[in-house]
Length: 616
Image 1 (tube, rainbow, N blue to C red):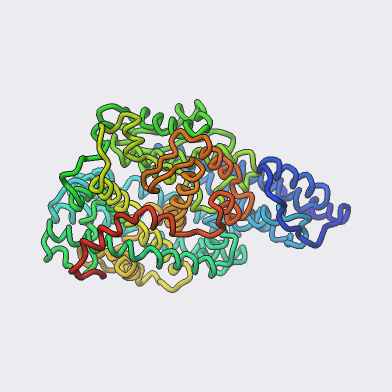
Image 2 (cartoon, one colour):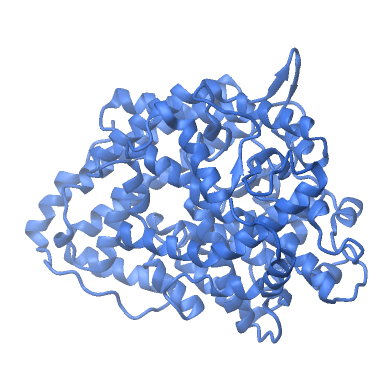
């Protein structure tokens, strides 16, 4: 066991003395210079800075080891890699537990500057899974975490000896128009997780114990502690954003339900009830872009889907190179050679892997990678663009102290790549040879906006309900006896989506979504949907674009690139509100840019929905 340095550091306080007041944040300067200057000042005055430097480096080493072992596991699922990942996770939890215990022996008044307090707080609270103090419980938590993720990665739906994985089942949901076949694929996947219910219940209990051990009521409080503002105020802001965007979602839902009723019949899709989940082209009905051919507003307008040309012209690695070219057109650096060597771009044929796309920073010093099973289509091209947003964030903030090497808030990290997908406009796709010549008009605009909204607007309530369910699981409002009932209550009330068959408490449908067994907080994705439009508008303004927001592409704009790189380089070194204000001119998240972007579609939907019964 690592010997604690805390007694040595605390004794130094008697020698150096500690300022009892915390200075206000300084005027913004270059992020690297600011962090260096603050560290020098704090080290000279107070031992807390020695502690946060030491703790940050200790945490960096443990995280790097854990990331490597988990990469090995997720790209080669077998008992050996699972055991190694479990051991490294257990070690990380042990390090975190010890560092948190040591950090709690300081208090904010011990600091000599604001930077110390911020880094100290992050060491104490910046984790999605605080470790219990009890070593046996830490070990069990690490074991359960690995088992939940491993089970998800290897899960299949079987009939006899014939089994289908998530990719094969999702392909059915995308392509089939037979409601019975769709229902069979949906239930097959969801039923595969019934046996994970008890394991998740134990996981939640141990996670709550870890939260309690660091001074929080439950795990939900830990998750909400990282937003630089009181949790209740932050949740109020989130609900205000949803209230502002709900009319647009309701209009889209009403239109889509009517179109599905035309295809499947109103006995299958009642026009005054939630939409059956298996009919929306996605295993979780979280995004609806795969049913675009059913709901396309103007079927005879030119087809602006570049998927056929992507399949014809680009290999998987070339799709990644095309996305890198976009980032480089903004003045951003080349990806390191190791990225191309170490990333997983296609699904291996010789082993089980977790195909869920993800970006990795293995050592916080440039060993960055993506893991994705690329298929040659536009959806995957946008996925790659999204994941490279994470990669460039890693590269531009890795000069900062380790605890600042993350997004300004977790929604920032998810929003960067999505911001750049908004610039993959038909004109951009035409410029890079993935679309033939076309004439933009009202019909092509509405079709394009519909395709975009089926991904971004349809997702919004799903982005809220995952954590809404888990917060209540963690705080005890939702008990294990009603896990599934409450899951579907939220899905019906927030999303207007229902299960295709009765689901009772023998099922664990929340576990069929990766982020639940993977313990990834999900509100970040809702936040990212809002921020990407704010970022897009700010970058389009920087690029000098004049015209409708939905037509803007910042491709080749060095001015927009500089603004983006400035934001990325700040990481989490200052409150996210300050970073947002520097980027957009406002410290508050706003739905205004998103609503502006979809103005043509909203007018179209309202016209189409006249005379229909909307709502659910």
